Length: 430
Image (cartoon, rainbow, N blue to C red; front, side, top):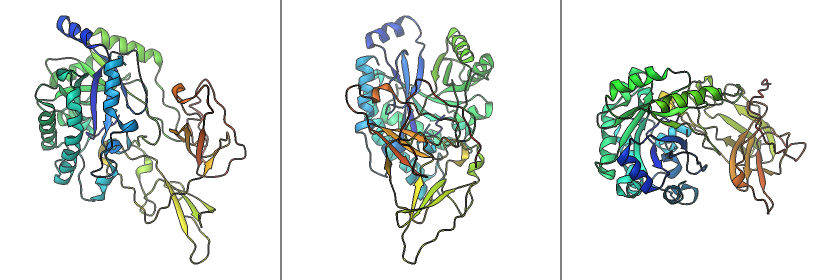
């Protein structure tokens, strides 16, 4: 549910080009797609995939654009074309935008539009050769995502985006938007010249939803651009799940209507979303950071500060001692009018402790062979396990497991690999 235009979304065909031509000539093309992040996973069994391109993933520092290694989106596009083979913190917006305290994100604010224009000039130039009409496999490009849920409702901003995309990608590319299934969201999130699609999950009446899309797009394909086959998990809450039978039945119903469907995605590493409809965003002025681990002299552990839980700590030491604070990245708000999610501090020093592995760990991050799987926090839950893609493991060489433990040295240095997840074991907070 990444919600910011910073995440440009591409719809990519993953069937052979000659097959595509025959399909388009003889009958309407209906895609069955899944949303992925090209730096995270490889999917098959679909005839299309939707790829998010997060701005903050490629321009984490202003003016420094990175498209190498795991950020090489063109390499991914080439794989999808030759072999038959996009939620982020702050909705994909780079944190450096918030260095300007007066900036209005996702609006016609001049500073924001300049930053957007600079980013798009680099990204869209790279994407143009991969458009379907240029011999590539990108069949459509999403300009904004769920903008109707944002407070600004700024049509000048949408017009600017439309102009940018047309200038760099040409007049023939299929541009679209996605919004929630309400009149208000579609009114503020759509613009003439950008095809309007909708998103919804299993709690929605399909007929009613597509009738609403038809009011905004009388002709053209029915599209559910984000079919919610699951939902967000929040630390300390029960695991969110959707009944498999409901998902399969609803997917079958939509496909039988001739609608195209894209199924929502997943996350790895630090690129987690931070949903804004949470009490944790009532941030005390005294603690603008989500979680801090405090040390004195880079050795003596003092404790953990956490907003809405522990806001004050007595720190002892001698005059001249060095105070180190390790600030954990818990993600930024990715949805709604609170994406101006400032993270500020007076002093920070990174203190990293590499451990082996422990089934008695408390809170931190885990890597498998150098790939960050994400955070663990078993005492808060609900998830007690982290997904390990089989492609990360070597059957012939030693596999390296690295943990960054933020709270306490574990009593035992071992971990258990399981063939099933444990996702709903929430423990009471102490």
